[in-house]
Length: 199
Length: 199
Image (cartoon, rainbow over all chains, first blue to last red; front, side, top):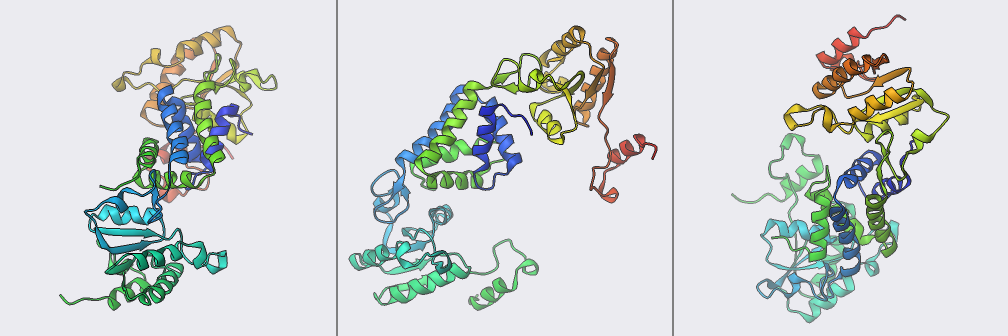
């Protein structure tokens, strides 16, 4: 019923497809793009096309990269004996932002979800095992999310990795820093209690 | 510190410039674009470039359009004696969504804001007055927002439009439908009382 001019309607439609962007936000973004200069609009469009053309997966860790092997895997200052396993490239970014982890990564590309047809063969688990056989690793830190699929994936990995004789750990779960006991759910509190440490 | 591959960093940066998109949303959008097919990514990029190239202002009402005169202005089924004045094309869209307004529009392109250097000459007020002189209008409905600038703009317009002998009204302000008296602010309640009608 509402009459956007056709190119505008098309852009609103394209924005609406993006995650977390509803009709209202899509409209706001489209009107914003209309106010950009020609060059700014082109820069945004180019960045989208460019990322599709130039970004692929790292041959070693399966993180996104524009090279064959990503910057992290090629960084010789990093601890090559320590490997953090994450489900998704976004989780890798979250870990990197801490600035605390100095080892390497392995991106699974998801978590086990049998209901959705995602088994071990759909993830980069075979590649992980091969990588551990070929490289001498001291410890594998599993950093999947603390939910059903993340837990199941962690359990599955732990079983198979221990067979290779490598130490397997998982990141701690508990009350988040700055969080409030009062507002923490029971499952989190149980995890927090379970993981308590000497002071 | 965080190492996105360069094309990815660039796209995240471009998304971060958009209104209401913080670093986290920008990252989510960029990763989403990475998962699109080549064609889908191209479609999004094209829509952005296209909108910049093809959309301009309607010569009559200053709404966005891809023609010289927009669909609404050219629609002969609409009431040409009734004109709704809005600040922004988005406000026009909001009015159109009601499906209730059958007249024409005039988009001011902003509101009076002397502190930011926006006076009558920066808005399409001269064009509005000319339009009213040239066309026989029955009524002008002012639909600027109920805030300081919107009120000042409405007052300014009312004064000048009445000189032309046209009837000038303003949309009602009050407690929103589905709203709660208890949560309505005082200014709104005062407006609601002020605008009370016979039942």
